[in-house]
Image 1 (cartoon, rainbow, N blue to C red):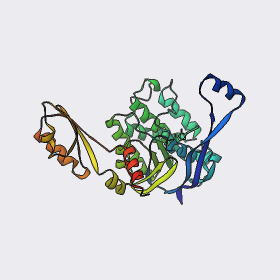
Image 2 (image 1 turned 45 degrees about the vertical axis):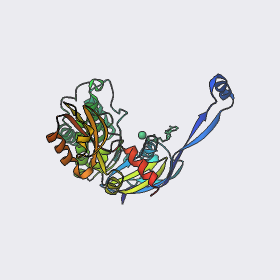
Image 3 (image 1 turned 90 degrees about the vertical axis):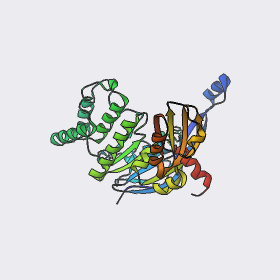
Image 4 (image 1 turned 30 degrees about the vertical axis):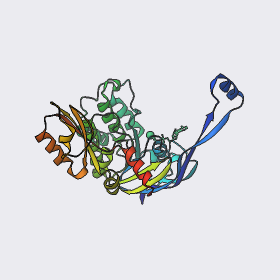
Length: 326
Ligand SMILES: Nc1ncnc2c1ncn2[C@@H]1O[C@H](COP(=O)(O)OP(=O)(O)O)[C@@H](O)[C@H]1O
Ligand SMILES: [Mg+2]
């Protein structure tokens, strides 16, 4: 049985409309007008148990709205969904115990109290037996290196520490499905990497299904073999990540700082120079050769700093859209 099955799922929001200025506000008091915006439009897909799927799209494409419907926070305008065999918006207790929705930008932890007290609360809510709770908590504290964060009020944690505590709170009851909305937003690269490894590990160990949205191509490239791309509410692509990356994101970008001036012409053998001033340069190189080219830079030039970036997701989406191929 598929973990998630979605058929022609749509969500239209009815939003109040008002004319500009004071007169517009006064008129709106007496005569409210509404306008419909379609956030999600006839989206269909199916995800098998144990799959780790990336859900991509530009800002406002409809990702969060879809995840909210899958977790039963929103009722769809039309369409069908079956998640772990449940209709999510019926919000059955059994269903609530088997999945978790984590939003990187919105805390589910209580701000004023230490994370461990929120964990206790979740133990009650999810009715986790004490022995199992202990075991899961110990494992999470270990895997996420949380021991220093547990007894500090959440508001005093760094964003990275908070996200780890956030994930721990969401995972204590060992859900079979994780819906992750921008889990690495705002985190530094080391912490992003750490969270990615954790997500991968959780998926493998528990054969848990993971559906993850991200603005960060790196997240997707490292975690997902399959992606869904949504644009203006419509599903644009559903398939292997590899083909999309090879075709629409064949290059990586190396940003480099120099200790002494280097001319753009000297950098040509490394790759295509897209930006260059005396002490900085940006060079595009083929994905498969990024390590070799970076090594070349480091050995031949007075490099003081170097970073390697992924193609931004919105560029990938734009290219797919522009190709008219989907
Ligand atoms: N509660 C709401 N009321 C009205 N419009 C909304 C609401 N939530 C989202 N939208 C609109 O729906 C569209 C999709 O939003 P969202 O699902 O948040 O996109 P994403 O997560 O991909 O950035 C956007 O145009 C957004 O403005
Ligand atoms: Mg969103």
